[in-house]
Image 1 (cartoon, rainbow, N blue to C red):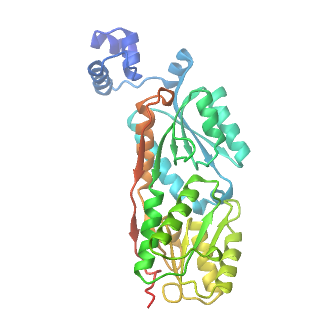
Image 2 (image 1 turned 60 degrees about the vertical axis):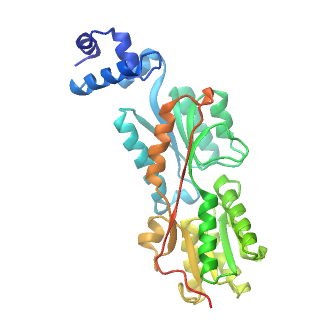
Image 3 (image 1 turned 90 degrees about the vertical axis):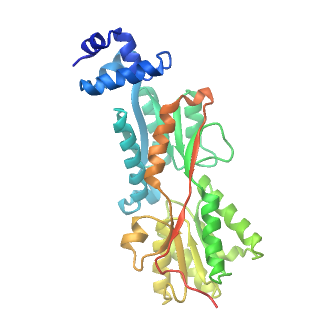
Length: 339
């Protein structure tokens, strides 16, 4: 079945069928649905490459996967691939192609986005790891690219995004520890240049204050994404110098593994002498010993939602949408009661 034959069966022009399948708003929703049903019935699949060549515009969704810093290890890419899986599932249902580029540094990442825009003519992009000051957002806004981000930005609100409710997640974690008698709570974060890390720190400080617990700067540290090994030394030194610490909140799975290593080095039994809690993923759920109590959220659902929002409309039309995923604590025995 080609588009000419499909148009004939529908008694519509080829242009109308093409625009209906492309989701153009100048074709009524009723007609778009009818064309879609006929396309499925007669197993018509548009040639996406030919369509892109003819129109000079790509129906493909672009995505740049960072493989540097913490993400340089395949062990720590579980959440990323869950997100990608959710996106792929949503794109498959819409017969839209997915173009993934890889980047080994921040500079290479920005160049990859330029390649998607200028060389591959891709007009639909998904971002991740949003920074408080993000050059990628400036680039996509400048060239009027339709995009959605995995992560929000406190300085720029004029774009669509999906994200974990970071403030609520940290509030839950901190209150969970406090209810178990913990007051000397340490926090291992990553660089606050990443918006989610900044949000989590702010929520941690606010929750301590709400519970009338004074923030101890010696209990807080942040490490760069590029320095996962360094977090072991930071945690080891922190615990050695601050014997009163009873619990550690880890902002990433990598730092949770470093916390386990540091506790083992200092002969501190996790779940008895010291508590560890983090954000969930395959590292702490399936591979760490012991498994770590964590706050879990639906990463795959975030990927699906990102694509649904992306396909809704062009971001330069100020048709912004967002979705915040709620989270739940999964107990695995790494948090103890303090009398």
